[in-house]
Amino acid sequence: SGNTQEETQVAVLLLLAMLLLCRGRTTLGREAFYVCTLFGLTIFVRSSALPMVLPMYAAAVLRDVLQGEKEERISSILRWIIAGVLGTLPFVLLVCGHNYLRFEDIFDHGYDDAVYRRYGISNLFGADPLPTLSAMLLSPGKGIIWYCPILALLPLGIRAFYRKAPFASVLILCATLGNLLFHSFFTIWAGDLSWGARFQICVIPLLLLPLAEVFSKEYQGIGKASIGAILLLSGFVQFASVAYSFNLEFWQNPRHGPVPDEYTWIPSESHLALRFRNIALHVLGRPDLSVEQFDVENPHIDLVNRSEKQLRGAHAVNFFPFKAKALMKNPGFLVRALFGIWTLLLLLCLISWGLLYRRI
Image (cartoon, rainbow, N blue to C red; front, side, top):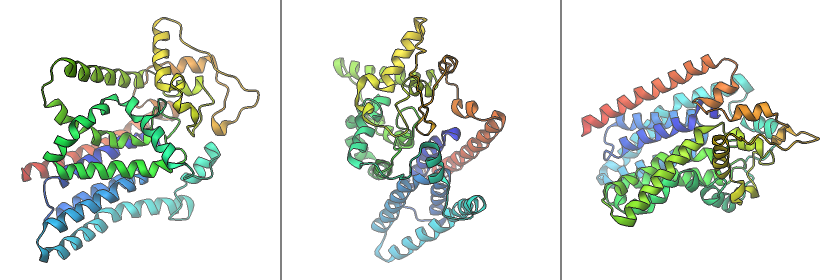
């Protein structure tokens, strides 16, 4: 799934939909239709985006109903229902058609079987939500706050952002809670093997929006130095994320499998800490090429013996699209596919900007 980087595409589509919804009450059917088309494409790109899209859609409907005149409420509801059906139906039909052609069942997406064959996991929703949620947010091994330290500034801007853009705040809350709650039950909640918690990438751009209020203020002394330090740390973390293949730390620690366990709470086993160590050793000319070897391999949970050559290859700079180009036999096809996808997203951005500009 990381091969086409769909988390970033979901983030772009959610941002476009949010910008259009924040212009004000939706009074035209074509505006509601365009927003629902963005929602439909979001679900088409990644079906697990549904828990984010549905609350945002419900918030838009409720906003228009409450802000409209009493006699307009029924028409507002009908407008959104029609827009929802027309905007999402083509994408639903495409998905159902794909499922039927491939698995002879419109409801069989093949993900369950693929996860079972790859990892031996039969229950996709077997995680304990509270420990999973805390690990997702705070653990040294997978916590969002460590892999995106700039989010530590979020409390400084939430109040001011809500005052200026209350509905945008509601939409951000809807998408974020939908994402976190859904994946807190997900057995492979981090999207491993991956760098950090992959499934939360699509809401991080939304969470960064309130930081505009933080950076619009002037700070002095300790406050200015603290914010500067957090920004530098965030930049270094993002550099570290693309320095090498995300497989490196998994290969060096093969007992870190697709289902994150206790290691996520051990700071010394955090892949972020290990990445800093790998960078330092590489700079010193002593890259760590050691890896545990097993008498009996178990590919289901990635207990596979790795060679020194593979470890050296994992130290290579992680150019985009790093994972896809490494895994695909025909990377040229990938480049063309990505070009088509991003061209479509650019077109949607231009259309959205045109709609926004007309309203402004």
